[in-house]
Image 1 (cartoon, rainbow, N blue to C red):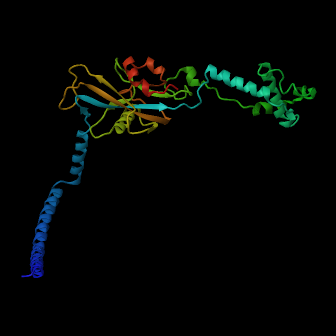
Image 2: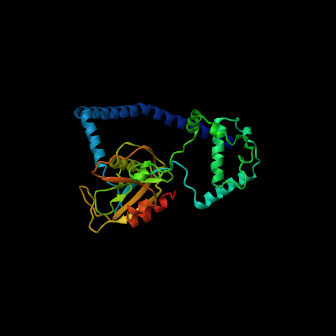
Image 3: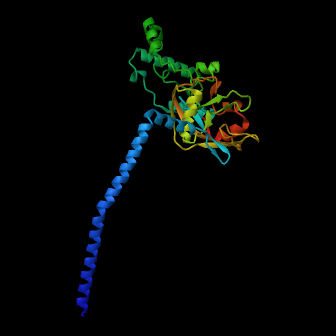
Length: 334
């Protein structure tokens, strides 16, 4: 038999076999579908029977009990995982100038006035107007304070308008006082009263929220609490803030990554507060950063008995030295 003939015979045999196998598989499909349908029907009937025996209310209670059991604290390698919240109020005004900066700006301002080309006041103000009189008054105050080098702009002019202040009427004086800009004081009433609970103090500094727990040692700290096994750090920090400080604060967490952590050991023999107590070696606190925009703390006098908004420097007198050393690098100096 030639090679060509042999090849044709093999192709014909292979085609016949493939058609036979495909035909048998197609014939077996109805049987498979029937078996699957019978299995699905039996499963559906069993589910319906179970649903009929257990009402919807029972299902809800089962789910709730599962969630309640999952609120136990997270323990990793004998250490309790704790989430803390570093809540800050950002500065509301620019910071105070240092003595060197103040001297530098005074020097620049005096140099600018000394080298400025003098113009008559009529170039800027209408002659005899209230604005011109206000400017002459301010200029006289600057000259008496020694802010000018040798000759002030007003004294460089003619003496024609030197006695114009005496021509001011009572209405002009009242209008001049009303038009004068009055700046708010950088020292607020809360600063004078030393109200550490107020957010209207230390306007040029960053304030941080610390709370006082009802205990003798390590009472002052950031709001913090144990992380449940179903929570992440941000959720745990938000829950602890709501429990300890109330819900009257408009907060925004900066991110989901902690800005620092603090680990400490427990006394020997400390056990977890659960149905099956286990020994605790210590706790690891992970701090989450947050900003406050409105509102304030509302304590319940149970978990928290006091609170304060303090700067980084003021925090030293509240917390323990070990705690301050652990958190100081997370805080702003301004």
